[in-house]
Length: 177
Image (tube, rainbow, N blue to C red; front, side):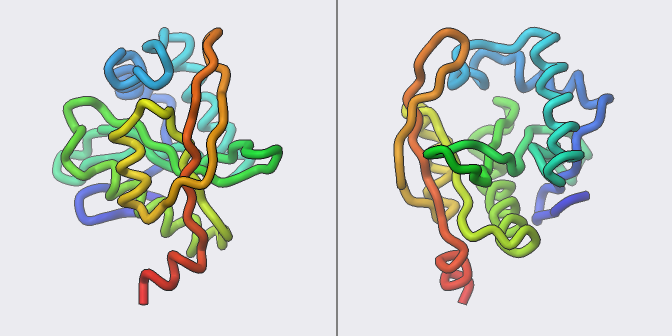
């Protein structure tokens, strides 16, 4: 277990989480911000990328487990991304549709923010979100982040506008007092 909240715990993903990841990454409604649902090969590559992140960075997207039944309901964690030609720590999240609008994303994202500041000693954390993904933008705002930039990402032969939200460690510690 990496972190735990009132209703959730986050742990590293394992190879045997493949089927649970398919329930998330192969749902076209969940993956609308990516413009398509993943194939089995893309899910496999996604999982391998997380395992490599754990090894190289010490963190990545983690499995979000619902304590009441030990079910994997989503992913949330920290990844290194590029913004303005600089490496940044991003909080990312994806949840099964059945678990949307229940507060799990913000609960997990807040735990990841705390981990980034208190364990990794990050100076600032970000969330980079598609401009049409209003629910994820609301999670970032509820996580104390403010809109700080914009960028265009190129996925699957499409240019996609993204909004960049961030919060600085000093603001995190001020808000806790």
